[in-house]
Length: 113
Length: 111
Image 1 (spheres, rainbow over the protein chains, first blue to last red):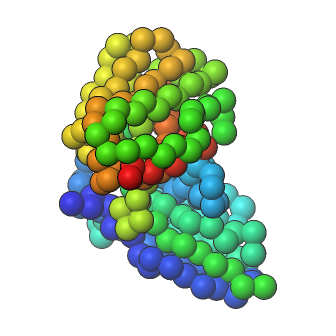
Image 2: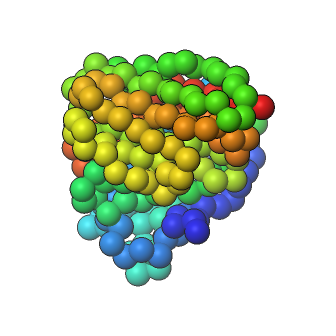
């Protein structure tokens, strides 16, 4: 049973556009929500992360929006570039013990020049 | 890849044979993890370790065992490989209850 549900499965965006990827969770014990970026043939790399005490976190062109009451969070990529073409994974953990992460199924983003 | 190496990077094996994958870190991080990545499933935790000789099961641990005899090495063993274990396996490390850093992955094909 998928603890974190991610959509869409794939996304095509024009260069300069906004890419939006959504995730939802059920476990209210989750309190750490990272996003990972993965290029073909590489391991996932942490992009940005948020804790539920804030509703938004921005790092450069990447923004996480967090809605605690709806148990949803999303990644926004502003001014999307062809170099952003990758697979993006959301994840969640309870932040205790070994901080085991539960991942979404991934979104393959393609940015068209 | 944050001081993490995985070996082998590619392996083809036959059903029923044992397989051991190695994760080696140079960061001296406490936590180490093994995940498998499959289309439509994202990454799923197999086993993890929170110290030398301290390990525990993850979400999809059946058919896998692990060992950690040194801080820097975390071994994943498929006791009797099956075709359903064909996957890409990633090791990750973490210094604390925050960022996990992933290795480059091992692509395993079980025929």
